[in-house]
Image (cartoon, rainbow, N blue to C red; front, side):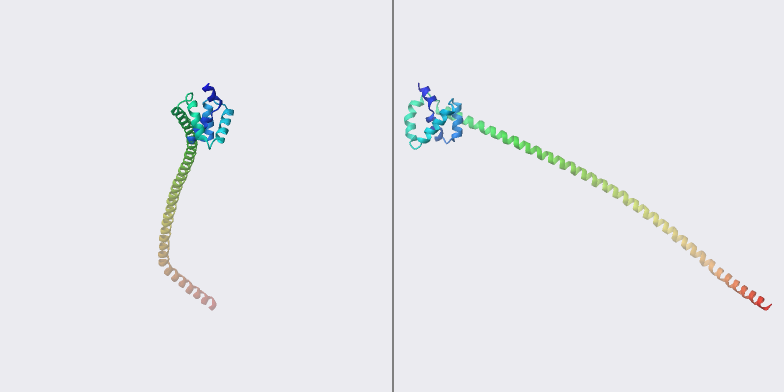
Length: 191
C-alpha cells in the first residue's frame, strides 16, 4: 500500500529535491525516471508550492511513513549525480564538437594562407630571377655600347691623324691651284 501512495503523490520527493537545491526542470526529469507520470509530477509540484512555508513540518510528518518504500537517500543522490553527470557530459560533447568544427575552419584558413604565401614567395623568386636576367642583359648591352664607343673613338682619332697629315698637303695643293688659276687668268687676259 505504501508503494501505491508513493506512486500516487510524489510531493515529499519534490520537497526533498528542492531542499537539495534542484530546479523544477531537474525535479521533473528525476521523478519521470522514477516512474511518475507528468500529471502526478505537476500536481506534486503545485502542492509543494502551496505547502512551501510549512514544508519542513509536513515533510517531517510524512517522512516516517514514506521512507520505507522509497529508495535510500544515498541512492537518490547517486541517481541525481549520475543524471547531472550525463547532462554535463552531453553539454561537454556538444561544446567539444563545436570547438572541433571551429578548429577545422582555422586549419583550413591556415592552409589557404600558406598556399597563398607559397605562391607569393614563388612569384617574388621568379621576379628576382627575371630582374637578374634583365640586369645582366642591360650590363651586356652597356659593355657592347662601351666597346663600340671605344672603336668609334679610335676611328675618330685615326681620321683626325689622317686629316692632320693630309690637310697641310691639301692646303698647299689648293694654294698651288689658286696660283695656277691666277696665272692662267693673267695669260688669258693678256692675249
